[in-house]
Length: 200
Ligand SMILES: NC(=O)c1ccc[n+]([C@@H]2O[C@H](COP(=O)([O-])OP(=O)(O)OC[C@H]3O[C@@H](n4cnc5c(N)ncnc54)[C@H](OP(=O)(O)O)[C@@H]3O)[C@@H](O)[C@H]2O)c1
Image 1: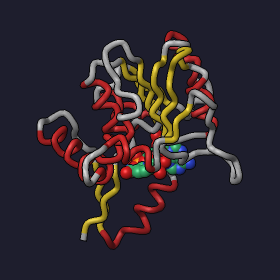
Image 2 (image 1 turned 30 degrees about the vertical axis):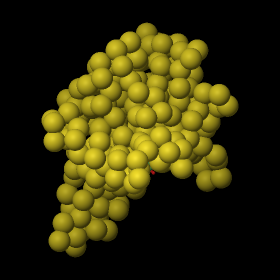
Image 3 (image 1 turned 60 degrees about the horizontal axis):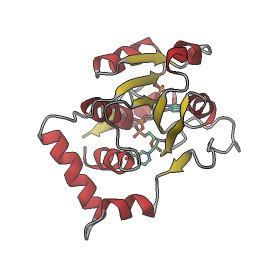
């Protein structure tokens, strides 16, 4: 919770969700995605989670998303036709083609909050960003916004307070330390949900 929760709190500083927002979360069954879905729902937003495959979309729905869409289905953007032009925030750690399709769903004043690019596409592709729409939040500005003498600690305390008060619950998938290779294979094949933890 400390590392991933801290990052989640750093991300939402750039686009605080609230009632009236429609928030799109790619990789919504991942470690960060799970927390971002919960956070946006708690804030009163309508939340759409994207994830790879039916098992993951079932988890995203159980985690509170209003709509969970399998974006391994090539026709997935059509499932969001009702939301086209209404998405106000995309919390995007995937990049590439997914980002391109997500940005196409944005409202005119919508924001594309970029914090990673797990699936930017073929080697050499750049993550998809659009001037004036996309904000890459990983960097000193995240710390500046967090404020305080120790900004990382500020974000950690926010995350831990959210968890202690029952608003954020991390998702964790455990592997034995001796099975680290299997854990890596599962990560590479997108077979994991939540954070992957190796246990001694
Ligand atoms: N955790 C942190 O504190 C932190 C800090 C800074 C940056 N980030 C960035 O935030 C993003 C998400 O991090 P996370 O901790 O939530 O990771 P995670 O739990 O491992 O989730 C990543 C998810 O990305 C999706 N994905 C899409 N394309 C993929 C591909 N080609 N290979 C593997 N996975 C792919 C997978 O979900 P589907 O199968 O559903 O698509 C996967 O579950 C990453 O880009 C990471 O670098 C994380």
